[in-house]
Length: 434
Image (cartoon, rainbow, N blue to C red; front, side, top):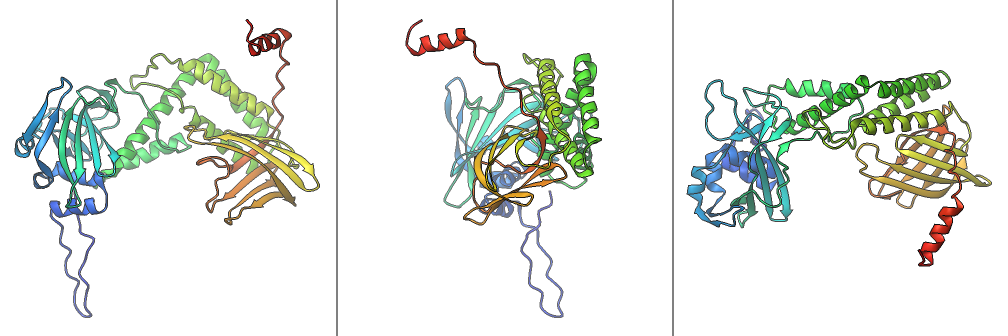
């Protein structure tokens, strides 16, 4: 790893600038502490013996699941320190014999309190081999016993290793075959693969790319498994083709801008198919039935597309996209009630419940809030475009947003009225009778 000091000498007129001096590993670790960059500090701690010698307590508390615990000297613990840095990754210490596959570990950091950091790690198999340790793909299976290293901030302003725990009770790891979890929000699966190739081709030492590349690889694999499931199942294939035909029919009657907006919405839907999947790296789904889940999602999408109208030039009515629905009702004069119920389509990370009266001016409903932020609903190209400028207000829940393009839709058919038998059951329950 190349460590260059950000400080440089000031150059006087007519004189050359003094050369930058690379800091010592210990100085770089101290700088990481001052910057509160624990991940960088831990990498230096594993990479350099002098950093470990400086930032390890004189006595280390060692604990194991059989309730045995005790103290060992810092020197004794460092003499058998188990980890090394290899490329972007962490591996078990000890030189590998020629041709022997190096055993890597999966490490995660946690910040349980203001002064403490935990590093959880476990032996793992990864799906890609790498001679230089730059790219090892995603973890296929966790094979070892989880471990934890505890670091605590001391008076010198830096972290010191104080405890090593074997098989901690609060381990974040579940041993065995690992599930694929996509943690990036890119709408285009081809973009995953392009970006993954870019990360894999990097020649410089950029450890931050390791986590990014691992997320990209998981997303590409997960998307590939879902594509294969749809392609190999006749029922799912028919649903997928019906969606394509409906999009084509709608596009033939939309403006170019509306077609582009609907194509982006469809990309968002395809991306959202990965949201709740529990697909293992060996291609199985444990107790989850991937076919039934995809069939339900595709059928629901086909129903939504079936209710979308090619265009509409009046605010009143229902407007939908992959995030949910906005219902707009004309109240009086130039005032409309806007009622939205939306959710993050990718990870259900936020919801948006919005119900407010908004005045109309031309082709726009708008409202400006006390902090200066504004919300605008604009009719253009036969669709509804929502623009939202935030200056501190929270319109509709933590992290929620109304932004995006919405398409005019026929409302869902109303549910049939409750049967008298069900109503009688509810009344009996309310009265406390069976």
